Length: 308
Ligand code: HEM
Image (tube, rainbow, N blue to C red):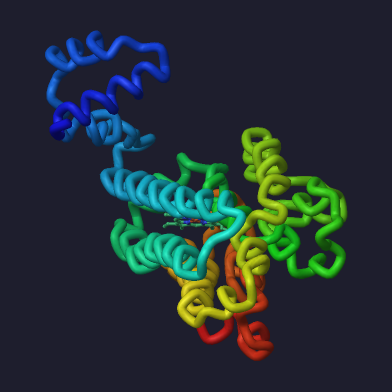
C-alpha cells in the first residue's frame, strides 16, 4: 500500500465508524475554501469586542488590557484543567504544565505597567466614573484559577481559616472565601452590590467547581503523587514559582497599578470602582493566599507578603 492508499484506507475506516460515505466527504473537499489567517484566528470577531463607554481614548487601553488578562487566564485554566483531569502523572509532565501556567502569569505581572504607567491619569479619573460598580474583582476566570489550584479551605479569609476544613460544607466554605472581605459585612451578612451582582451571575458555577476540584485540584493532585516524584527538585521549584507569581507578583503588580490611580496624592485617596477598602484588602500580607503551603518554610510563610 502506498502512502496515499494508506491515508484513503484510514479515511474509509474513520467515516465508516460514524456511518458516513467517504466519497461524499472527498467530493466536498473539491469545493472547500482554503483556510485563511483571519478565518482561523477569528480576527474580525476578536477586534470587534472592544467597546468604549466614553469618548476618552485611553479607556480603550483599559478595555484591551483587561481582555489580554482574560485570555491569559483562559490559557492558564486550559492547562490547569488538563492537570486536574489526570489522576496520575509524572513529575516532568506536572512541572511542564505548571511551568506553562507560570509563564502566563509572569507575562501579566511584568506587563502590568501598561496599566500603572500607560494611561492618562485625568482620563482614567473620568472614565472610571462610568464603570462603577463594576470591577476586575468580578473576573470569574481569576477565581476559577484559584479553585483549580488549591483546596478551598486555603482560600478562606485568614480570620476564619481555622474554622474551615475539608469537611466544611461547600456553601459554608464559599461564604468564607477571602474575597468576600472586599464587600461583605460579616456581622450582618450584608453584601455590596459588587459581590451581589457577581454572585447572581456566578455563584452556582463556583459552588459546582469547588465541589468538582475537591481532591482533584493541583495541590491535591501533587500531594497524592508518590514521594519520589513529589520531591523532584524541578517540580518543587516550578510549584513554588507558580504560587509566587500568582499570589505575590501578579497581586503586587496589580496593587501598584491601583495605587498609581487611586492613591496618587496621599491626601486624596480614591475608592476602587467596586467600593472596597482596597489598600488593606488587596495586599498579600493581609490576604495570605498561598496555594501550596507545604512547599514553603515556616519563615517563608511567616514573611508572606512582606518585603514586596
Ligand atoms: C488601573 C487599573 C486598575 C485599577 C485601578 C484596579 C483597581 C482594583 C481595585 C480597587 C480592586 C478591589 C475591588 C474594588 O474595590 O473594585 C480590584 C480588584 C481586582 N482587580 Fe483590578 N484594577 C485595575 C486593573 C485590573 C486588571 C487589568 C485586571 C485584570 C483582569 C484586574 C483584575 C482584578 C481582580 C482579579 C481583582 C480582585 C482581586 C482580589 O480579590 O484580591 N484589575 N482592582
